[in-house]
Structures are given as structure tokens and as C-alpha cells.
Length: 477
Image: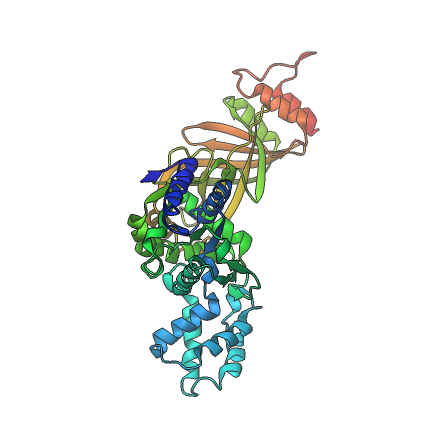
């Protein structure tokens, strides 16, 4: 059953839980779905709702069972290079963890740190294998994918769930996304105090997890979101809670996360009793790292533009093409823009990508000023760190369930006039617009607004009426 109302979905789960508890001592709610679909948020919503029904619950995230980089990479090397035959593997993992835990993410397995690792594990690996092992660490780290099942210890997850069902004490697992490693936990879950276990994670519907729990106590859920929601939530979240920069996150998103979603996560959707469509809400659309304030008006008076260009100081002039993207099933995109900016290169005679920006919901104003949150996803100069060219980017977006929502061509001229900054946009098929990026000279702004859309602005001088041209001349003098 597909549900788009959070309220309905919440009560459908409560109804099933109450039914299960008529015959069993505990119920388990499974929440699976794509990375950044909102599983953690949905789990908290359910926990609060269950509390209102006097049912005690605990949230178990499979993310907490992440093996950490030291465990993931060491297991990969052991499996791919040594057929799983390495001895002392747990001790090696612990030593590697201590060697990389305080190192910046991109430098964890650089040449310098590999020397440190080598010196500390040389007595645990055969001398003839040590260089192959170190080479494997570097190689596997270069292609690390945090969104595949082997990253998580799902068997241990299932064991802890069963222990809670059996009223045992279970040590909480703790994983840090800042250091990408397991951390020591001193907290415990008392199984005898729990009525409902909420399990959330991208692989929470994997067979190795759900087949090791009695199916009669489980409510199966799959959380779904549109393409733009998944992409933005992942990039913006990782920028806040991990040490990875946007270039790494976006590169990994298209190279690994989307293929993993298609091949190993989406296939579990059919196991779900309830499918909840949890797209970006209005509150999320209003959040950003920057806020852009501007006032924009349309100009139909060509003489006004001519005078502004004649008497103002031109700071820059460039041809731009903006490409807008939306999810394939997305309807209203005006309050949730995802824009790739390209700038025309006169030497190469083509538009070249420069930046990727998200613009959120516009604040409600009565003064016609446009204030909206902005998130810079790919800053100028970083595009080619991730993509080969524009086609590479567009193909990646299409593979991630995006489509092109529109293209806008314009010539943008930035000028200053009497300390007032102005942006003049000549937009193809839409007309000419002026943005006031500050209010350093309100008289100039008021004059432009006055003459923006009249047919004959150039009036001869009189006692009470000064033409736009002469007014600007006088100010320049």
C-alpha cells in the first residue's frame, strides 16, 4: 500500500503494531529505503506516536552497526586479495583504526600513513604479503562505497533485536560519521522495558536481517522520496555531519549510491507492507547555508537601459545559460530550484559549467523583495573535479531519476552607478530585468523604478521635472 500522508502512514503502523501485540510480547517495525529518504525522521515520528499510545519503543539504526572504515577496508582487502584467509584480522582492524582515526578523511590511507600502518602490523602479516596488503588498503579506499550491504554487520543487528525480544540487556552500538568509525558505548537497552523495536536503515529489509527475526512480529515499511529530495538531503546532510567535502559526496552519490539504490535497495521495496512517499517538505525547502536578498523589476523602457549603460561603470559582462533540473515525478519546482550555471567561453565558443546551486522556498514579503535560502552544492572551480564535462553531469543526473526542467539564456551585465550596484539581465524570450543587490543609493533605485516601464522617459528639463539622462549626468558631475 502506497501512502503519501505522514499522518495516515503513522496510524497504519500503530494499527498493525497493536494487532501484533495481541499475540506477541513485542513488535518490530522495519523502515528501509534510499539513503536520505527520511528513515530516521520517520522513526522518531513513530516513536512519539507509540509513546502517546503508552507503548515504549527503542530505535535501532543499522548505521550504528557500520563496521567503520578500518573494518570495511580491511574486510575488503582480506576478501578480494587473500580470499578471506588472513589471520589476526580483528587485531589488524583495531591497529588500523588507531592509525587512521584522527587523520583527515582524504589522507587516511596516503603513502605517509601507510608507512605508519606497516610498522605496526608487520608482525601480524607474512612479510611476503605486507606490500600487497598495503596496496589493497589504498585501492579499496579509493573505491569505498558506504551504501552496500557489506558495510553493515546485519547479523549482529538481528542478534541484538532478538535479544531485546527475549528481554535481555543489549549494549547500544555507536558509530561516528565524523571519524567514520565505531565508538565505545556505555549505554544499554533493557529489553524487558521495550514494547516495540523500530529498526531503520537502507538495508533493513535485507534477508540476512529480516529472516533472522520472527516474521509474525514485523511491520514492513519502505520509505521513498523523489530524486531531488534524495540528492539534496544527502549532500546537505553530509556537509553538516561528516568531514567530507561536497565534491567527494556528490562524486560518491552518482558513482556508488545511486547504483546501490537501484541494484540492492529498491529491489526490497516489494517486501514492504507500506510504502511511504516522504518528499522534501516546505520546512526543508526554507533552510540554507546562505540567504540571498534582492529586488528585481522588469524593464520595458529601452532608453533607460541605454542611459544606465552609458553613465554607469560596467564591472562585468557575460553570457549565461542556466539549466534547471527536477525529479521525474516532481510537480511544482518554483520553490525548490536546482540550477546548473554555464558561462559562454569566447575562446572555445561554447558554454562551460561553473556551479551547481539549490534555491529554496521564497520568503513571504509585501515589499517585492526576493529573499530565499541558497545552498551552494558545487562552487565555481570545482565542477571538473567531479565531472568530465556537461554531458557527463547530465547523464549522471538522468541516471539518478532527474530530468531537465528548463533552460534560460541571458546576458548579464553588472554595473555601479553612484555607488549603487545594479545587475542587468537580458533574458531570452522574457525581457530585460534589473536587480538591486544593495540599497546604497535609494534615489537611483527610485528613479529607475519610476522610469522602468514608461514610453517617453526623456523629458526636457523644467523647474519640476528632470529627465533620466540629465539626472544621471548631474549626479556623475
